[in-house]
Image 1 (cartoon, rainbow, N blue to C red):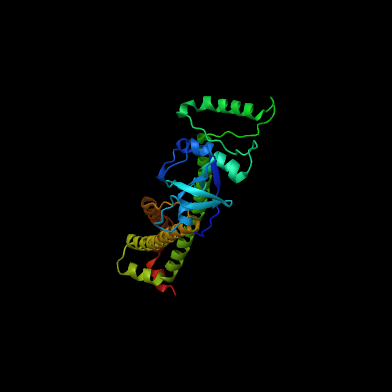
Image 2 (cartoon, rainbow, N blue to C red):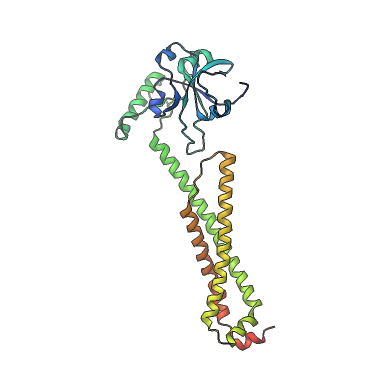
Length: 296
């Protein structure tokens, strides 16, 4: 077709999918014969398929062009989703390594490899494997003793730890913003209720004069403050869900909408109403009935 899509084309060996534990959803992956012969075959990620082909169209056997070089589509990768950093792993075209060198890059000069993916049998052997990988790369790159490495070795534990630390920093930042927002909102509710008590002083005096107890007045204003806070919390939850859906649609990020989190936010809103509404409610309950009836 005439569809165009900018995406990274990666030259990888036939063992790439087994190392990445990445299955196919259709077709086959290229083998050693494809790699040795620099055959123009390609395996597409799901995002690339969605962009280049119409829904229901079979991409297998179709011809695509990578840097104006025709490639036959022989397989489609299973959908893998995004990384923790928001990178779409399905937006990729995989071609044999030697094909990338000879047909796309047009070079066989050392230096065309920018990443090597290695898999250990178990996580327990990682401390032993990493020094061996470093030693092998030192030998292959001919790095003199004492000179800095021209490569970086990272394992999944380091990446997971970095992601965990970044998430913790973001969580603390969001908690700080939420705490300030709750404080400001609570003070706002308290001020509104204090104004309400002042404006309804005569009403309070009448209720006290006809037999209402201080507990009744206290409960009335606590209920009003809590209701006000719960309404604000409900509006905030609805807006939060809507904003989450919008961000997920625009940025194509995976999002999780948690019902327990929404229920917890609703309960926190009620607690804020009770806490910040208690002072105005107590002030209303302690009004002198005679002075309240005379208030203008």
